[in-house]
Length: 164
Figure (spheres, rainbow, N blue to C red):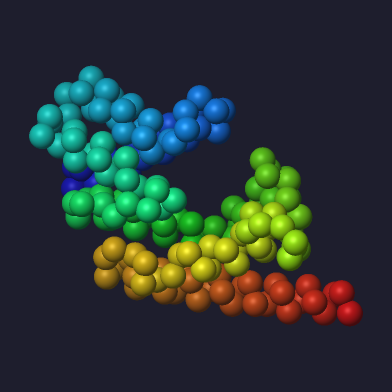
C-alpha cells in the first residue's frame, strides 16, 4: 500500500513541466523527481524503485504494461480517471474555455483531438474495459465506458437533429 499511495500522490508531479515544454514526458520526469523527493523524506529505499517505476510506466500513451501489481494498479487508476462523467466534464470544460479552445461538435476532417466530441469518440476506441490490467478496474471501466458511450451517442443524435 505504501508504494501505491506514494505513486498515486506523485504520478503527475511533472505534468506542469511537460505543459510548459520543460520536459518531453511527465511520466519520465516524474519518475526522477519522485526518487529525489522520496529519498529526501526518508521513504524506504527498497520501495523507492517500485514507486518511481510505477510512475514511469503509468502513462497510457507510453504503451507499457506495468511489471508490478502496484504499477498496474496505478495505470488502471490513471486510465479510469480518463473515462466516465468526470472525464466528459473535463473535456468539455477544457474545450470550451480551457487550454485547448476546440469546438464541441464533431469535426470529420480533422484528427481525434480537433473537437470535444471527437476526443471522446477517440477515447472510446482506446479505453475499452478489456484494456485494463485488473479485474476491479475492468468492472469500474465497464460502467464508465457505457456511460461515456451513451453520452456520445446522445450528443451526436442531438447535434444531428439541430443540423436538420
